Length: 173
Image (cartoon, rainbow, N blue to C red):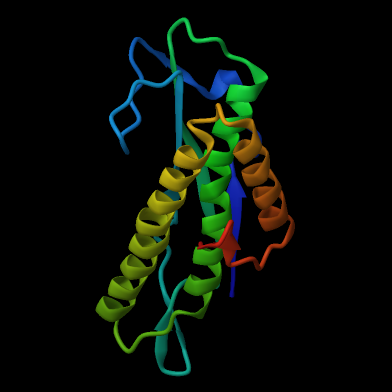
């Protein structure tokens, strides 16, 4: 089964951002110049039967799109955009793991298949993504600690260059 990950767009630009008077980080409630998260979309395609078990459709695209906000009047520089890009890339890296897990899902009923799909989504897109995003902002002081910003960028480059990676900076994806 081929569940593929599509990021749309792959690389963020300031035109992907919606301007707001105040931008708050939902993790800690602090005012920020920008905030980036991701949405995911998995089409609702009819399941198939494999060896007497229900499985997701043979092929589909798991699409990642940005949720991107910028504070009105904030300096829209390259360093800030680079910091925000990594927040978005977390979604792409996690989506790869989700796609692999979903491609292996088998269940004796549609309800069990749906519950298993929801468990995978909750674990990766919500729990693990949240932990990684929070740690990234703490380590980099929301992008102002250049040492840790570079370390996280190196870690993400390594993660994205290995399509079967399960870790980012010591965190499970």
